[in-house]
Amino acid sequence: TYLPMVPDFIQGIINLRGQIIPILDIRLRLGKPHKEDCLVIVLNVEGTQLGILVDAVDQMIDISRENILPMPAHSTQLLVSGMCSLPDGSGTMMVLDCEQLLPHD
Image (cartoon, rainbow, N blue to C red; front, side, top):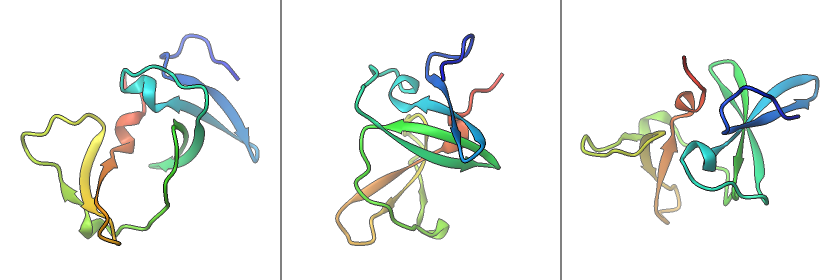
C-alpha cells in the first residue's frame, strides 16, 4: 500500500500475518534507480519490523558477531557497519547497518 508524505525510498506498507511492515527500497536509499523485479526481506531492527527490497538473495548464512570486523577508518561506505569473510572462503561480505536504514528526524 502506497503511503503519502514519506521519503521516496519508503515504497509503502504490507500486512504480514497481521503486522504492518514498512517497505524500504535499498536502491533508492542509496541513490540508485528503482528496479521492478525485486524481492522483500523482512528485518527486525531493534524490535521494529522493516521490509527491504533487494535485487537478489544469493545465500543465507549465520555469522557470529566476533567474526565481523569494523570497516577501515578511511572507508566512506554508507549503510555498512563492518565486513567479514564468508565461511566457505569464497570471498568477503559487507555487513549492512540496518539501524541506518530507518529514517531519522
